[in-house]
Amino acid sequence: MSSPQEMPVRNTVVPYASDAWPVHLAGLVPRDVAERWRAVDRSAQAPQLVAVPGDDGEGWTAAALVTARPGTAYLKIVDAVGDVPAAVAAVVGHARRQGLAQVKWEGWTAHPGDAAAAGFAALNTPLTWAEGAAGPPAGYVRWVHDDVAAPPPYYGQSTHFTCGAVTALVAQVHAGVLPPEALDRRAELTLWRDATNFMACEPVGLGVAVRRAQPSSRVTVHLDTDRPVLLDHLSAEDQEWRALLQRTSRTEAERLGVPVDARHLSLSGIREAVGRSEHVLLLLSLATMLGFDVPHWVLCHGVVPGAVVIDDPWANTATGDTWVDAHLLPVPDASLDVMSTMSPGDFRGAVTLGHPQR
Image (cartoon, rainbow, N blue to C red; front, top):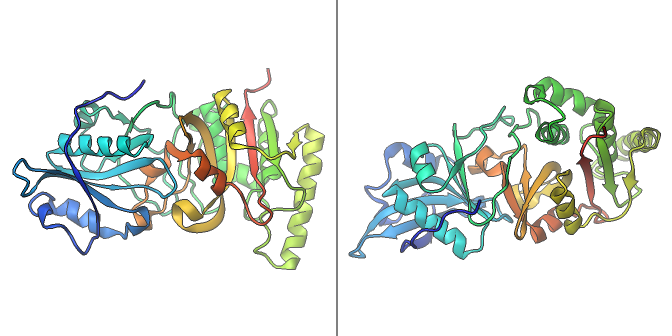
């Protein structure tokens, strides 16, 4: 369903800096909210204040602190203060003017009734938290135009290195191949142990491990290079034995009938796969979104105009990033294309999971 329309709210948007608050915030922000706003350095997520000026133009009657991961198509309300409905409506209008896909609202102070009245739906609360992560007990989402039906559960990876296993398991739960109670740390580590190239999961090894765990799964690996991948940061000696394991994975893929498609998987190909209700496990770099140029697996499970909707099992608490950012995250096609073009060699790695074979 499309989001409801509302009357536009007059607003002003200014950059937020924790050490230089606008005078108009005085008296609007409760102490506990002020402490949360100042607790972390949010500068990496371009924080802004979306404020509603008073009728006299001399002050603000409402304001919201909003942030977002770079390279994405949403805004996140950390808290709304003052006239909360007016602040939230101002943020939605601001997102619409920017052509964004959605607005999220962290549940630190948001009341479920207020969220519902503003057209927001509750997000799935995490089955587990990412390692070292912190976040609100609830979260809400409002799609500006089209939304995503039947979202997957959110599961935060319990280690720094099990993102590939988590995305595969979440995809299988979302597809009904596994029951939700099967998604736990034992399953996460078991699948990672079978897929790992120590410590990362490369595409062929991940696809093979999924097929071994679920023989009925329709698995296709997409990898447009025949050289070993994700090894260039290692010494020559460490590269050698991991490259051998990757060649072994290719041999095992052939034995199990897991196709390895050497053609470049385009963004339109990803959108088409998701449109067929397939799940795409996509390898990308977190450099744009989180500032870490490290390979990372995310789950592509939905599409909206101009963006692919992913779930990321990792959140970076140090910048104010939480599971609310990582769950149902719309990424514009052009941004996702850049993020998933991997170095060296500008290759793309992915695993698509289709409907199980009967």
